[in-house]
Picture 1 (cartoon, helix red, strand yellow):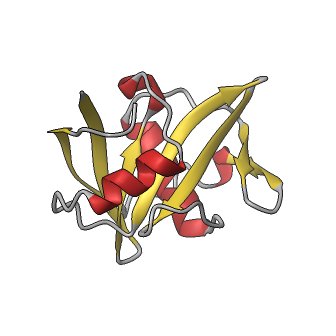
Picture 2 (cartoon, one colour):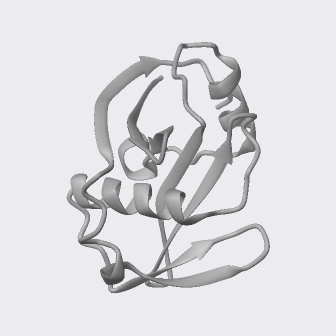
Picture 3 (cartoon, helix red, strand yellow):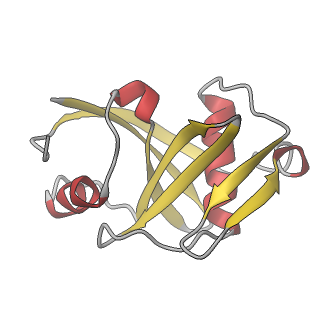
Length: 132
């Protein structure tokens, strides 16, 4: 199965973006761990998963370098917003940011114009045998 991910660099870290719209498959804990353990040379601090659309809200999640879900922080949010802009999504005025502890309302318009310093490295396609 082909998986399309994009790699972004920001705040001194690289992150992979798994877009469920492009991949037609959800990213769960087992798949995140399989990707990180596959030793394909991704070299990323984690995986940002989204956009997840639900009830007119937009969510995303973060999986750390071990493939486990982690708490969100500002760098994750800004990198993901940059991906949304680059991928041509029409961002809503706000979105719900899903966190392990709580859901946080986040105003996209406050940050959408302040994210130009994040560098898009490349888009790549890899054949992965991951848990189906």
